[in-house]
Length: 234
Image 1: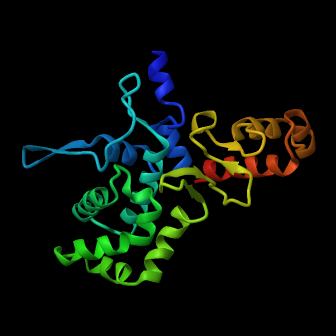
Image 2: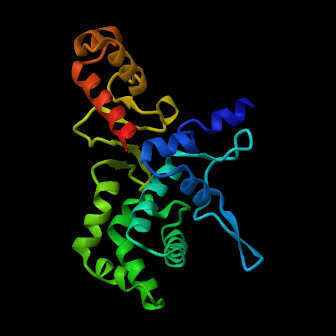
Image 3: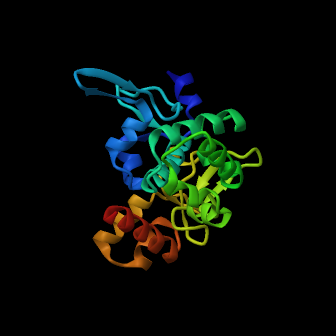
């Protein structure tokens, strides 16, 4: 038991509802992407595999996500909103995984800079993706789509692994770091959970008082409250 817990340090652990709350992606979608699903058509049952291989075993028979799993889901969600079909997305994921040597190719810096080329290569052998053609053949348009998810808001290690997510941007205090507090949202300098600061402010309504109680700055309290309000409203 101790060894299993130790191996999860620095990975981040999120239930599907938690990942949904943080990303704004419906729980049902995350679950289907992570573990696959079965559907029936003309009395025939078909099993669809996961879109990527998750990092974590099931917890109490429920799916769980790592930090990288959650980052992967964010980018997949972008392409789904653009109307990219699953066969195309799965093909791109397979090619990118092999090219980059990772099970989480979409949340890498290399995908932000080289992913367009992979899409073009896959498009050359596909049909019925005209709406995607204009996006991937325009480098500026492609970067504009991915930059909010992979540039600035996400920090990468020297070996191209996503290591931190700043959901309000790096000028704000809120960070999601799998090496701290099991990946729960905290204020960066002091490490206090955003949920704690938000609850305290909701009860007291004083930025300065809450900051004093928890040894943080009023700015940190404001950022924590803003973050919690934004994800609650999403």
